[in-house]
Image (cartoon, rainbow, N blue to C red; front, top):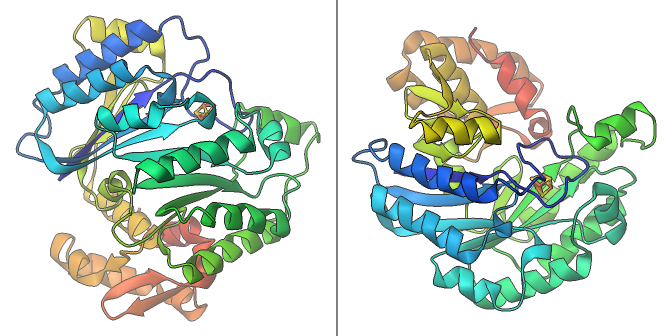
Length: 374
Ligand code: SF4
C-alpha cells in the first residue's frame, strides 16, 4: 500500500503559532494548482505496482479551494496512479470555510474523511491563536459533518498559554460530546518565526510549565482511554477501524509521495522533500523539473526511524523485525541501550515488542533518541 499527500500552501490569515509552509498571498493560487496537477503527472511512474490507499489534502488550508479544483486533483491522482477500491480521501477543513451544502459537495467529489481544525472551543483561545473561526462555527461544522460522514476527526491543541486543566478538560468533553471516531490532540510547541515566539521573547505571553502540560497530556490519555479511543500515536486517538490511513502509511514505513511545495516523499530507500517556496516551485515544475532534494537512508537511518516511529505508536518496536531486517548486532544494541529506561519504567517488553510506558510517553522523542545508533 502507499499514499499521496497534497499540500495546499495557502491560508487566508496566519495563525500565531504556525510555522508550516503557507502563503497568505493568494494571487498565485491558480498557477500553483496547475503546478500541483502537473507534478502529479510528472510523478506518475513512482509507486508503480503499489495501490494507493489514502489521498490526504493538508496544508496550509485545503478548504479554501473550490470543490471543482479539489475534484480535478483527485481525478488526476486517479488517472495517474492505481487506487485501492477502499481508498480514504481526507480533507482538512477550517470551520470558517464550510458553508451550507459544502459537506454534501465534498462527499460527491469523493472526499470520505474530514478533519475539522477546531483547536479550541473557547473563543478567547481562538482569538489568541488568531484563528479565523469562532467556536460556534466549529460546532456547526462538526454537526454537519457528523450527519453526513462516519469518518471524521476533531483537531485540538493543549498547553496553550493560560490554559488550565479545567479548560482543557472542557474542550475534550465538548469534543467527545459529538462521539467523533478520531481526535488529534497536539501539544503547543513554540516555533521560530511565529508571533507566539516573538510574544514569548517579549514576555507578552506566559507559557505553561512542563508539569502543567504533562498534566493535560495525562488527562487526555486517561479520559480518551475511558471513552474507548486507542492512543495509536502520540497525538492521535481513534476508535477501532478509524485510525487515519494517511498517518498509518507514515508510521508503518510505507511509501508515500508528497505533492506541492514543502511536501515530503519516501520510496523505501530515499526520502525527498520539495522546495518550500511557492514561486520557485511553480517555476521549476514549469520546466518539468521536480523541485526536490533527496537523501538515501542508511541502515542506521532506517533503524533509528523505526525506533522513533515504533515508540511513538501503538505498534511498538518488534525484536523479530529488528532481527530480520537489521540483524543480531542491532538487536543486542537495542537490548543494551533500553536497559536504563526499562529500569526507570519508561519502557517495557511486551513479549517481543518494546513499548513506551504511560510514564515514558510524554518523553517519547528523547527516550527514542537515547536508543538511536549513530
Ligand atoms: S495552523 Fe493551519 S490555518 Fe493556521 S496558518 Fe497554519 S496552516 Fe494556516
